[in-house]
Each structure stands twice: as C-alpha cells, then as structure tokens.
Image (cartoon, rainbow, N blue to C red; front, side, top):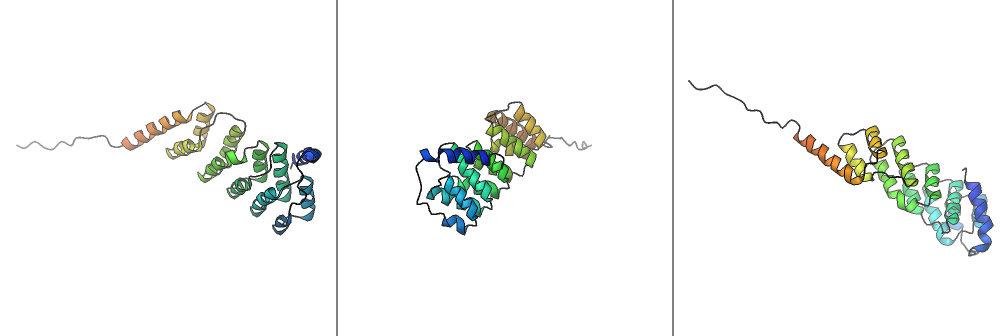
Length: 202
C-alpha cells in the first residue's frame, strides 16, 4: 500500500491530540483473523470500539490487515473515525480491488460513492469503463449518473460511445432525452404501413 506508511505516520504523530481509547476491545478482530502485529499497529492508531466493529466487516469481506489499517489511517487523516465497514464490504463483494477501495477512502467518499460504484459493476460494464467513470467521480468531474449509463447501454450504445458522450459533457437530462429518442426510434422501426393492393374485380 503506497500511501499506508505515510497515513500511519501522520496519525501516530497526531494521537497525542486525539481522544484516547485505552479500553478498546480488539478481540473481535483477533477472532476475525487479524494478526497480532497488525492489532498492535491498530492500537497505535488509537482505534475505538466502533471502529473495531467496522473493521470486522472489512475483514469478513476478505480485506488484508494492511488494507484495514490503511482505512483507519485514511479516516483519521480526514479527522473522523472509520465508520464505512458496510460500504467497504459492498465494494469488495462487487469485485473492487483493495487499491481501488483505498483510493476511494483517501478521497473520503466511501459512503457517498459506494452505491453507484457497486451499481456500475452490476450493469456488466468492463473494468476499464468502470475505472474511467470512478476516476471522474473521485476527481469531481462531470459524469453521467449510473441510471443514465445503464439506459444508454440498453439502447445499444457501446461503452466507447457512452464514454464519448461523458467526455463531451452530456448531462443526465440530455442522456434521458437521448434515451427517449432512441427508444422511440427503436419502437417504430419496421412499423411502416404498406398498402397491399388486390386485383380489381372485372
């Protein structure tokens, strides 16, 4: 974890100014499989009982000890406790890597972005497409909403075509209009009226 050591150092240095959690019960993490050395590092991060409970969810989602420690360090760097165990577990279950999860954590957007991020996976989009959209959202750049992306895909647009629309600045309202137009065109395709002429009676 590239940024873990830096985050850990920052948080250890600031522990003196934080509320001390001397009586935190770390046994649930021990039972969840965290190594004793990692537990000692977690103590240095001054984790609380509530954070331990959230980390148990992350461990149950098969995150490594290093990733769990980095999650707490990232939260403390943002001046709040780690409270996003469910979001982390959902992202992991959807196939996001530890690196991707930690990147979201470092932007302090685990809870705000996890629902859409999971939905992007459920749509069946490629890893490359998902990464581009995720990066744009983390950077605060304009990006189509997940429902609009799904609807555009369902009308037959390729991922490359959708990305071109995103990069051109298409808004959700414009995407909805595009979807409506494409669905209308599809529904009317092949419904042209052809008059069949019969023989005139003699």
